[in-house]
Image 1 (cartoon, chains in turn yellow, purple, cyan, red):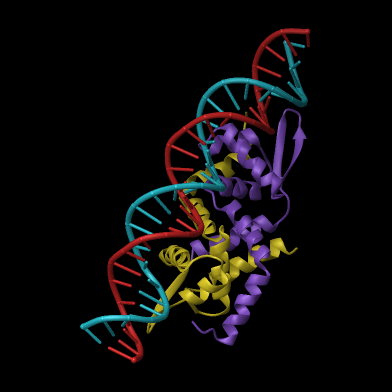
Image 2: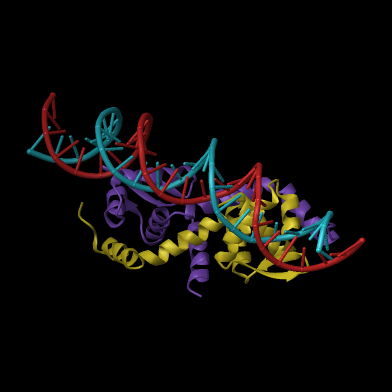
Length: 108
Length: 108
DNA sequence: TAAATGTATGAACAACTGCTCATATATGCA
DNA sequence: TGCATATATGAGCAGTTGTTCATACATTTA
């Protein structure tokens, strides 16, 4: 099929920035799981320790811990220790923005 | 572990709106794949037919078709026929907004 | 120091995802 | 009407994902 020139340019742009869009997909993948989204939403309201998060999701402490590890290694959350507890919080405000952005689509 | 009152309220809110956050995760899941993201990004620039999209992704026409079906059944894209071609385009501007929102996080 | 509490981690597994291949359907054209 | 082109779809498969279970590690307290 013969391309119009305009579409060729779009295709070039996407091919050139291929890695960028893979990062984008990788980012959205983090929000693409109900447990993780709920964790992130909770953390937009307040920092929390693992057992607090574990309480209101119907999954075990272990599962929460696994998910938090993913979120931390992706730099969406950060931690500090407070005695026996590890307190998780959002790294920055991007998470909040992204969630709000998606919510607007859902609740239109 | 004993909850602070504030955290209890957050947990209640999240439990009550559980389905909402599952929809949110479902939405982000659509953006959580490189092929789909590239398709959506392309469509923010111009409507396109299947074979055009198929050209610049290194996947087959069949794979593109499968992904477009997913995007269509989620109401992110819509179609019209033009002769032998099916032209795909974005349903509304939310996709654009969501992509921009994620890009800001990536390219900070 | 021993027990209790909070968190992290590895293995295993079922469910899901995205791709390919083969093939069906739909339209346009000779 | 027959053939070429464009798209859709089902089956099958390999890779990924999210959970659980068992257990290890870290900190506090008796």
